[in-house]
Image 1 (cartoon, helix red, strand yellow):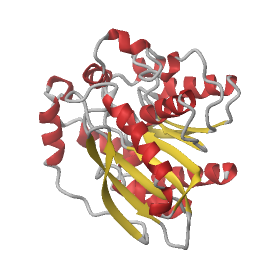
Image 2 (cartoon, rainbow, N blue to C red):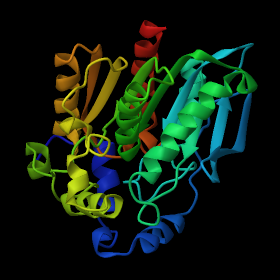
Image 3 (cartoon, one colour):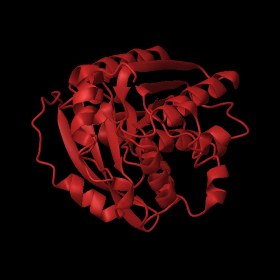
Image 4 (cartoon, rainbow, N blue to C red):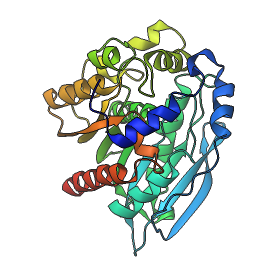
Length: 308
């Protein structure tokens, strides 16, 4: 048994009372989490928070814009929430995004990309890339600077961030100053050492991750697509500086470490942080892990200040 953080242990005792999520339909899982009573958490002070609709091809998606105190124009941070491409929304990452904006002094734009299985790959990725382009093209209207745009996200959002960075490189923009990958999905092989060690009982079970992946992709062929599984990309050069955060007791730990290693080997500036004793999902759970989230955001702030 790994040396779990006491808060992580208490969190898992509650989480493991849930039904087996991978045996449920996607909407049933969403409905289950929607039933959870709201939890009051201390929210970081900001100048403004507003929701907007932005165009992506022939539809609109919602974004939430967090503006810090101060004059601006501010550097920008485009954030993609987690949830296995199947669950999650703007509320999932709200408290963490507020803190990122407050601590980094960046305007944070959180993206409500469309979800699988109703919208499989590449729709969530295309929404995410379109949101980056919108932010770049409309930076002045949100008191931001298009010369300094970071992107980032947790879990599936970390996957989308890595894929958006690849897509932006391949399509010659928009320019990205940095990518922040928080326990990202970088492969759909489900076969690393951390998958073996933490396959059941640590929040994100191996079976549940397979359930998420199967809902996201169209066929096994997609698992060999670099925009689904960035770890399989042949070329990782000329990508933005990366800060990769992993949780020690997480099935995704080893593929996050492996991706950071491959980025570094490709000549990308990389910094890493391993959160000891923590489990998948901690970064957006302000009710349970406020101090550890603050610590991670302090590290992110330090990293971003080094690339500005």
